[in-house]
Image (tube, rainbow, N blue to C red; front, side, top):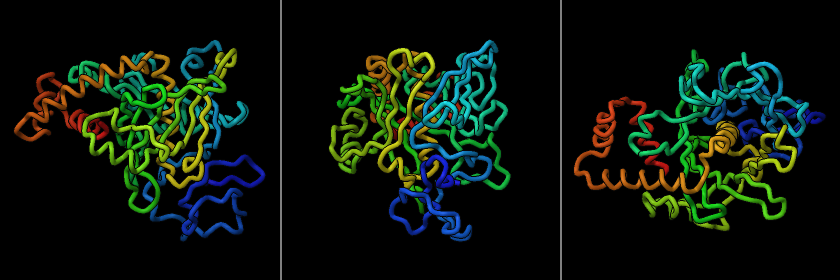
Length: 352
């Protein structure tokens, strides 16, 4: 499903459909040359399957447009399109207040990426605010919750069977000093997890603000491991860091209609990182738009959350017992002890 017919618009290829290819071909193969289903990637664990197969491929360049109308629904939905608004790919639904209590995040403010152009189409991914208990632990909300398809959904899996990922806000010494970090399974084979960062930028030529999605170099990853809980040391300025996508905000009067432009680059364009990575890039880009609306991308705000995490990490380091038990004790103190929250705390610690 990852190649469109040559006469149609190109899409991000799926390396799982090319078992022996080292890189994606710039021209989609003819249908007669495509490998039979038996040769298609059975070893790619990052391929979306079951009810989570995107009904249309994501495009190399996509634009999000606001929907204007007199209905209440139009005020909380927008369109994810290809390069042109006429190429309507997916509908995004926003629950800014959470009062509707619909969606996988319940009463928390969230966004839902539907697998189609209608609000009635099933969910493909979602993102939103973390549980209030995390604010009690850290003093501020330090992250976003990303709901993604499971790595190995069972035969009876539905769109209610989702895995929880974290989008963590950190300060960095590069660009505009702010980044949003996540980890996700990539490639083929075992589907190893790697860390990626949306780094805040401002184009010196176009003056457009936005973010670039970066795959830190091995040197950067090594510095991160050595740095421990230091978020700034985890994102050094390195010529080896690969830019995988650009997310830019519109300028001038175009902001009245256009929400953002998302353009894939490098390995993010070839498809070699897998469908799961591509979906994560799309849903986190949409989440960054919502965070921007909510004024939650300011460096001072993120630095405050970082200090709170650092204080908590220091308490864990000084604890002589099991760090997991210490985290559980903290959660119990705020009356919100649950397996889900404990997993979230561990996931945040893993991204620091």
